[in-house]
Image (cartoon, rainbow, N blue to C red; front, side):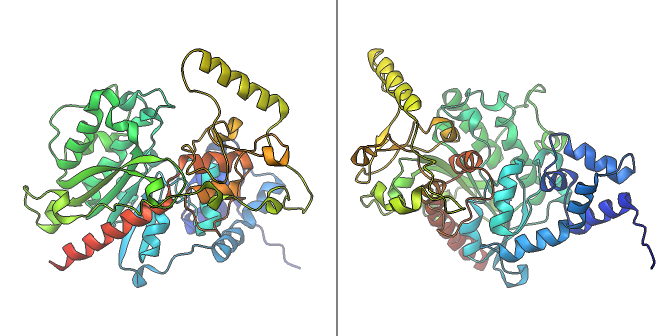
Length: 436
C-alpha cells in the first residue's frame, strides 16, 4: 500500500485559490477566531500546521461548498444566460441582490465582512462572499453593469453616534466611490437610513450627491480614514445622473413603518445624457400600493412558534417576567420625563410595526407581540416573522446562524419588497437607455 504524503501548506494555498476565497473567508468557514486570517496565512507558509480536526475540515471544504451551492434555494443562472451583471457590496444577507437576480441579472462579485452574515448568504445563494471591501483592490473586482450597495448606516442613524464621515463606517461610501470611478458601471442603487438627509445639517448628503455627480471640489481631510485606493480615486470625477428618494416599507404591502433613503444613478457618459437631463426625466420612482397593511399577515400560526428543530415544545420567544417588568418600569420612567421611549406592543390587527433594528436581539423592545389573550407575557418576533416583516421569500433560510445573529441580520437588512419595486424601474430604464 502506497502512502501519499500531502504538502499541507501547498494544498491549502492551492485549494483557496481554486475556490476563489481569501484567507479570511477560509478562516470563517473553518470557524476560526478573530486571528483566523493570520492562522491560515501561517498554514500556507508552513509556519505551523492545522490540528487534525481542522485538517479534516479543510479536506472537506470543497465538498461542503458544493453542497451549499447545490442546496441553496437562490442559485443564479450562468452569466451567459443573464441580461446584465451586477455586484453586491455591503451585502449583508443579500436583501438587495435577490430582486435584481429575479430580473435576470447575474451577481459577479459580493462583499460582506461579517462572518455570520457570510454564513446566511452562503446558505441561501450557494456563494461565499468576499470579505472586507477596504482590503480588496479595485482591479480584482470584475467589470459590471450595475453596482448595488447598502453602505453602513450606523454613522448616520438615530441609534448610532451620527458622526458621519468622521466615523469609519461612514467612510465606506468612499469605497463605493472608488469602484464607481474605476469600473464605471452603467447604473447604481445605494441604500441608507433616512437620517442621512439631515446629518450635519444636510451637508453629508450634499457631499455624497456632489461626488456622485462629479461636482465635488473640496479635499477630504487626511484624518478621515479610508483605503488608499479610495483616496486616490477621489481625483477622478464621476458623472452620474442621480437623485434620492425616501421610500417606506408600509407603502409596498409590508406592515412595517420603515423608511429608507435610496440613491439611483445612471452614467451620463455611457448613455450620452446631457447635463441638463435630471433623473426624473429618465427614471420613475415606484409609488407603492399604499394599501392598508396588517401585522397578522406576517405572523406565524401559534402551533409553529414553540416547536424547535428537534420537535420539542419550547417557548423561545415569550419574554421573561423579569424582562417584562423592566420594560414596563422603563416606559413609566420615560413617560414621567415626558417622552415616549420604551417598549412598543402590537397585535395581529395592528396596521404596522416600528422599524426592526439590529439591536432587536437584545430585548425586542421596539416590536413586542401582545399575548394577553393567551395569558402570557408579550413575545419577540420569530426569525421567520422577521424575514416576513422584511419581505423576504418564505423559503429564505433563517437558521444558518444563531437566533441572536439572525435577528441582527434582519435588523440590518432591507425591505425586499421595496427593492423589488426600485429594481424593476431601474432595469426598465437601463434597457431603454441601452437601446438608444
